[in-house]
Length: 138
Image (tube, rainbow, N blue to C red; front, side, top):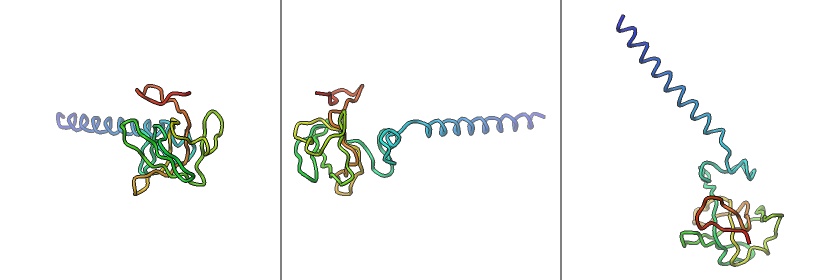
């Protein structure tokens, strides 16, 4: 009799743990991601996923027709490649000519093997609530 009760307790603990894990996994998969916000099929928790998608935020320190260089909040810089599909936005759609030195930007795109990022979307003057030292609107 004691053996049957012990087996039932072990089975209940295993089933309970499995249910908890399944519920937690289901809830995590229902959280909004950057892909839902920007509709580009990429994104994930903390802005990173297996495809290398992550935001690059900071100040433009140089630019040309094919790329911009963004100074990051940690003092380093990141080269951002502009493709034919790169969108540049602010309160309304903006043009590449508005990507000027000194502008605050948030870049969403894919990491390249050389350390640069190919931009899919660039936000001018982004607001990141809750981040100390984050870019503020002009």
